[in-house]
Length: 404
Image (tube, rainbow, N blue to C red; front, side, top):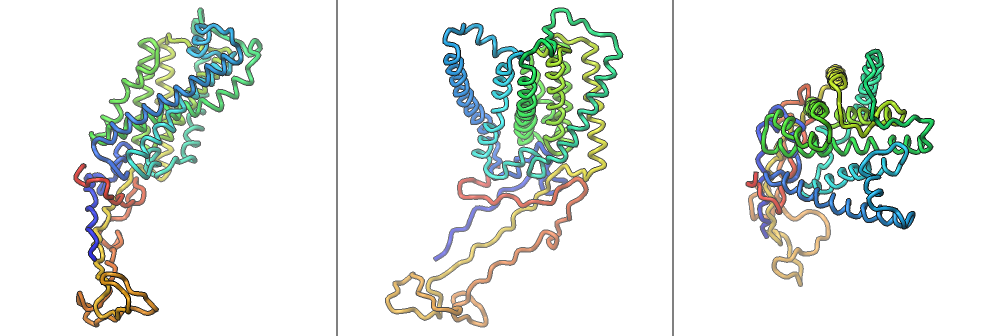
């Protein structure tokens, strides 16, 4: 019988096989990359997050009711709308609720886009832990130096700020542990959503990286309730994080910056040096923040150039392989008694008789088509700045290659 011809592999965009896919274009290396996939991933991710948040909220209300049946609902709600360094639970709940965005997004992307889910993290198809730890060390060094220099400047007015000295905080150690555990997860979750999902979604439709870097900025800014100066600082942070992701080909440098920034902010509040809930930002604080971010970006660029500098993924189109055509039983094969037409007869060893000519229909077994290795097919070796070429995901029966 003759097997149906599988669908042809979907066409790849030009940058996938030439200069390589930058981070914001990595959806083209996934199993499905139709124009509709970013919308489906976002909708499904939001649905998952709402369900998980509802379950978490119900569990939290049940816990509070069991621990204190006479608790005032208004007081309880206000408890979780503000960070309180004297209350580890008020720190943990909002941080964990934000961290849950990671599994919701990854699961939604796996359902919609299929395999190679680790391309959400970087062009290497994984989270590059050594690089991220190196960036975290650089960010910490930059923040410590700039913060130390800031103490040489006139102190800012802290009137009205809720400062809690460590000696007055009976939950200091518990709050410290909560921040160390959950701030990195919360910061990584925001990067996976605002730099991972949004950048790769926009990159599916618009090739130039500037669109992927700038368009998610307003959404990120609206998620932070600061005054105009504070929102300006958040916007600059978002632009820098987007540039770092594009420049280094992964989320690691942006995650490191976000984690250190948030740990420093919460740490200052925990040690009674600032109010983490403050929404007013001074011009001096904005300048200091811009200097920190700029210095960190410069250090990362230097480290990146000293390293291997790989930031794109170049694909090689999957070779078109013609399916073998089998006829049962092959001509010239001795048919055993009791074998119905079209049924494969019992095989006792050896190979069916073949004709030297190997012509169709004379009992020849079709040879497997030769696959030419990329190096011999005229495909150049990976250049500086590229990861080794990967193969385009093979098209399957449930996707139409003409969708893209």
